[in-house]
Every structure is written in structure tokens, then in C-alpha cells.
Image 1 (cartoon, rainbow, N blue to C red):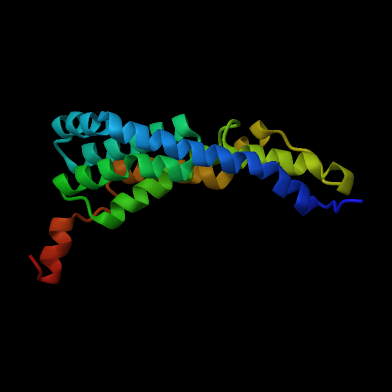
Image 2 (spheres, rainbow, N blue to C red):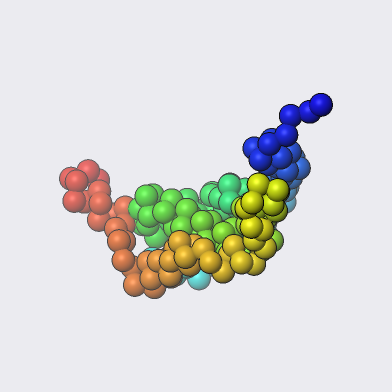
Length: 178
């Protein structure tokens, strides 16, 4: 006789995803060692003439990373150095850079049906059938996640309008430190 429950079934389902995450970290190291990130920083540096352009590059690069890796933390680790250097070069405050990364990585994994959180939700509801929980498919999970849709609108507004933007230069001047 083995123990069975909704929670134990869920734990069994995430073991594979845990190994997947470990393997993705190898991908990040490979990208850094290949020099691809250095080329990306140089490419974006030549095209980021304003803070808005730099923020758009940051949001786009982390968005592409999360779409390719399907993992939020791996995406942030992949573009973290790029974000720091690009943001420092044009004077984007470090909190703003962190918020942009967080906003973008909290959008796609909860909308698209091939991401881990959406798949986990669908799998969890599938394993709850015997407990009376209706099954929900991954596409339904993403389409009905109003928080992720709202975050998508917020990141677009933040980058395009500059809402909440303070640069490192204006912050340090206001505090009296140079």
C-alpha cells in the first residue's frame, strides 16, 4: 500500500520539471561562455539612445529569453548582466530595471500553454478529477489569467509612457550624493 493524495500526486508531477530547470542552467552558462550576451550588449548599446529605447531592449530581451527557456528565473539570470550594463549606461534606476524584469517574466509563463506554471495548473486539475475538481486545459488557464494580462498592459505602459521612471542620475542628485 502506498500513500496517495492530491498533494503527493502533485509532487510526483514536478520532479521532471525540477530536472528540466537544472538542465536549463547549463544553457545559461553556455550562452555566457559563447560571448552571445556580449554581442547583444554591444548591439543594444548602439541602438539605445534614450532611456525608453534601453527599457524596450531590456523588456524585449528578457521576454525573448523567457519565451525560449520557458522559465522565469533562468530568463532573468540569462539577461541580468545585459540589463545591468544597459541600464547603468543610460541611467535607469536599479529598482526600475528589476521591476521591468519581474513584470515581463510574470506575464508569459502564466498566459501561454507551453509554460511550466500553466502546464502544472492543468496537470493539477487533471489529477483532481477523482476529487471532484474539473479539469482545465492549459489554453484555458492562460486565457483566463486576468492578472497576467494586466501585467502585460502595465509593462507596455511603463516602457512607452515612462510611468514611474526615475533615473539613477536624478535619484542621486535628489539625495545629494554624486
